Length: 171
Image: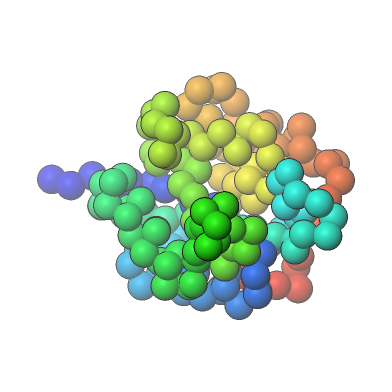
């Protein structure tokens, strides 16, 4: 019998982000059971300059019977449907991100995969990942640190450059 997987995904966009986040969540919902979506947060680009377009991010909780590898492929297909181009004509990582869908947590799995490490390292390193995740999964225990998401989030609560955008609904 197939196992129901609990998956937390971070959606982000810096190109027409209101439109692309909503479109990405809508398409995701066509393939998977969306349980809940966090509020949207606006942030500066990680490692970027103040002139770079700001990102909008939201965390999404889905339940699915599909395996991790299939889920990863489907997320890349959804990104492509939303116009995602990973590299520019010169082979450099594109600064224009129509939609980025990263798996933050897949059940309680731990993996050191270079392609898709679990749990995603951004949970411990970036406010744009942990704050929306803690909004929808405050008591979820990080499988490595053994801390609740709301506890990890407290270290990022007052970081500059993170703004909750209640004027934007991800659905």
